[in-house]
Image (tube, rainbow, N blue to C red; front, top):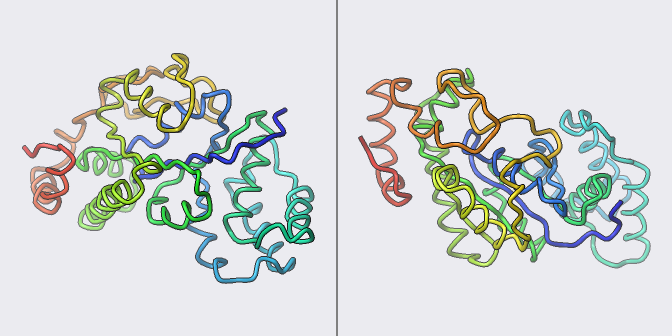
Length: 287
């Protein structure tokens, strides 16, 4: 088991149904990187309630640790996190006065323990909407790397609709607009730490794009990453819908343009009108 954890965390951001799980499966197959196996919303659910609380207080710190450990996406881990060790490690930091304990420290120790259980020296987390916390994440981890995945909004919409999720066309378009605006802003603000990848580019040219991703993440490129066989909890493909007529567990562009025939003309027209500027900026052509 790896005992030395390198502080170069990897975060994958972007909207649901944008290819973020595919990217996690690719980079999480690297033998040095332990990507958490599900979308654990550490920053989305736990940062805001606890960011202004005194986590150097053992009682409050324990409350946060227990809240994380009771989350359904932690309870489902094949190998459970050791609560006693996690609290002991945090107590030791507090006793030694090495640093103030905040949410970032607690999240890191939780994910470091997961990495050790996987025998890997780096840790990472994929969870939709992490882009909204990019600044706090980079303040907590100055050496972190954030990958933001974007996808044609029409394909995102049809994927959400096909899964039977809550359907509000304007709300979903607004989410895409906000996410892509943040992608542009953070990539301009933190060019060495923030990289935007288009899903369509990845599935059209897997090898060169994965090489680019590895270079950005300071990972050695390995051809086997394209097989996605080393990520815990991954047994899918980059499209799970029967209408594409494809079930192979390989990287394929077959789901690109899937919205055609599955979104109504009115839905497509609204999406293209509402997102006109952002679609043009990211190279998505309107019908």
